[in-house]
Image (tube, rainbow, N blue to C red):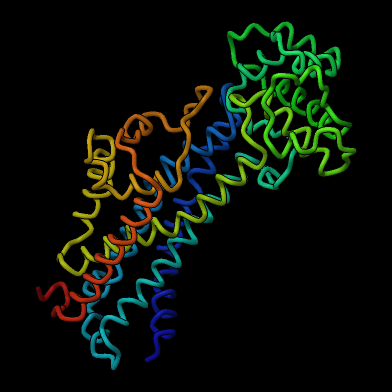
Length: 382
């Protein structure tokens, strides 16, 4: 039997309706929750909601739970269904059988968490929210209160110049805003739309107004040039970014976060999957121990002081795919946020990649070695 045949057989087993239904329901949860928040919360912020739900639901729960169930099931299911004996009598090395079954687990789990992330991003940012654009999106505003206050009360000549370009209706909204409550979404949308109109209309640069303001090197290099089209939009967005660095994410911020998450998710699946597969080869009932590790150890250890966080996979995944906390009070995670705050020990990305590579290598090689030498019998015969 070829490796491909084993892989395809394992895929068919994982794609059975009952298993698939549970996976689909799990992957829909973050998007449904985001949709509820978007339609019910006065403090809704798209980027904050995406960050919170990715951190608390997708990375901490959906990824871990699916990796646990599918990885341990690669062995325990064969034992419980009494097919382990027939599986091991095939003229194929044991380690290759397990490796192909694990590859199928990786495929299904990765596709599920990817789908969950894509649906969540679609709800939070909209269809065009992830395109590389120099227009400002409401979801790129980190602090809506400060954003409006900066456009309202400022001694900065460049910001005053922007204020004067707004329509009388928007100027009235800016001037009357007290800063006590989060501005309503329709007013923010109107303000952003008018700013985007300014970005496209013509150069916003004025030598006197921008004197003393530190501009990025790529923006400074375009000063005095006759720009148009995409170059003009890029230049003007850079000017506005220099004026509002603390309240506005750089252009393409949503896209960067989204693609980084898609890159790191398979690494998380591989790390947790390898560990749980190792448990399945070592213990008779790995699911119980895996649940304790996943939702006990992984929930508390990353928050402990000192170097305890280095003994958690979640810590390294947070370094590789950091998600900022909500800036304007959007309560997307609730108590989950309090349980999973990152620890105080700083870990570099290089160390995180190296640690995960070592953990994956040790766990996977141990699983393959044990499976190749251990005797397995049907569960009821144990």
